[in-house]
Length: 253
Image (cartoon, rainbow, N blue to C red):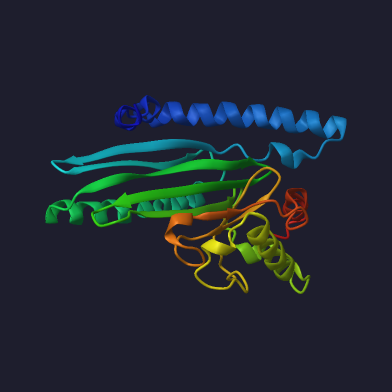
């Protein structure tokens, strides 16, 4: 069933660009009306700021011994069209790298199985956070699983690295490290460790949900292959999404 799903191309992608613009214009008018209403009742306007539409570009790569599904995001309806194009190029390049690797394996006659896809973890409050995941098997004992976040401001297209979310000299990094150490113990992951945890990297992969920061620990970096990509969620104090939204309102990001 999943294979059949990935073979279907999103019919909305075939609509003329002019019609797509009309959709964005109508949505922008709706958002503006909602913002005016929220100003009247005293609710933060920023809650209506993300009106980014996220489409799925889908493709199927098949061969005698190969089956690989591709699904990557295409952004529309951003107010900054140049930023939108830049982000779309980055997202397409990410999928292209996977396709190049798959094509090379197919040409060698290796068995190929897997997929690259994405999920929208957050699209609101001026922030969009996508999770790009990939699984690829090309022979041998195990396949490879990767997962990374792609987080940006919906107004300017600025990509947000982890350190962009943390106040300098606030002790936030130390707090995150302490919470990760606690969860490793609590979740019984100590036995899966291949090295002792000391600290995340300053460019550690992550993503944002509506109410939490989620740290991603890539496969075979801290834990054994059997653990896969480990997600560490629930940092109740760092960063609070509402604090991020306050920064946006003050023009600090």
